[in-house]
Image 1 (tube, rainbow, N blue to C red):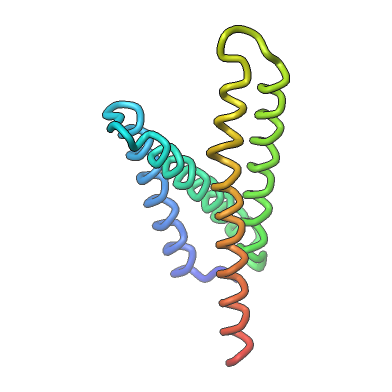
Image 2: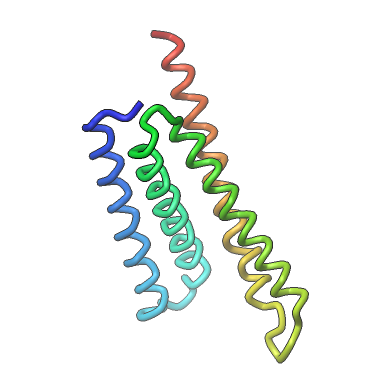
Length: 136
């Protein structure tokens, strides 16, 4: 159940991740430091995915206060990963032009590990919080 101070805290964290995602994407696109392209791309995708997942958690927390935000985060992460895999496979299978399938390969290379790490981190945090709640 979300209380008012937890809702405000979640909203502040969500805003921070949106700002981090925007800054990381702008640095990746505008400045583009050499030898950091892959790191910045992974960071931008991670911050963006966290921002989207936390935004969905904020929305569902307001709609249904007793819902488990860990479950909402995990389901949102799984849906985004499935959509990314679907588009990547579509892009790889529709080969036209010189750079046929390169975007799909990049999506599989960058986004899927990020989604897997986010899902694993959500599971670890859920296990730790569950153990702490059972002790009290």
